Image (tube, rainbow, N blue to C red; front, side, top):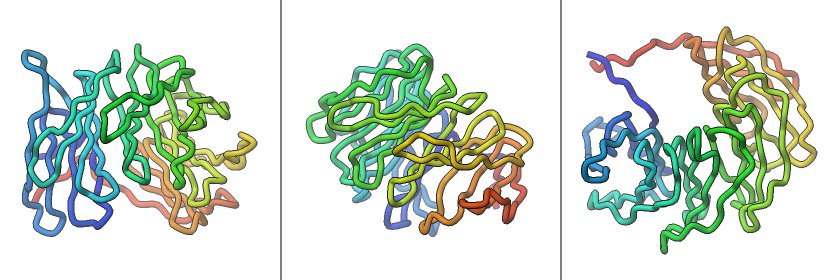
Length: 265
């Protein structure tokens, strides 16, 4: 038996995991025991929903999820109740995240939607619609101060936005295939991106200049992230390896092979 997981995220206290398993359930698991704490069905009557992404709020009290039925769901972790359904996207919701203060949500629209939408958590109101990508948007993440968002999409571009105004601040170009993930450094001065072109790249967030290209994966890179001190970058690829790189030199420091599926004990 194998477990196929579409997307998962861990709570800030490290005690819970939320899983979007490409079906219509939000599952919340206990990290230590592996027990399922909540299983919440989210769909519209008569329309099957596959959830592609889920994330915890910073305080761990809420979960946000989205998928094929175009809605964004806010779920109360303790009760398992759906608190709000946010409507606005015109295609699949590919990725979703809370702001660092937990007051906003950013959600990414699929192929024909091509937008990132920013929502107010308390009211459910759509605050901003970020338009500029020319195809579906794979990834969005807030800076640590919550003032900017970096997005990556199928159009091979990375874009930086002002959260309050919705203005596009930078468009970063250089990848030769879709950008699957993007992340800020801890101080917000650098961005690392992962692409289907088999590379991860390091950028200056202010100037938009490419600082480093991390090459070595055999095929597409699915995600990239900074270490807490920003001195290293870790990447994961469809080639079934995880690699660690030196941020400044671009040198590969270590790699691990990972299995294609996870088999429960």
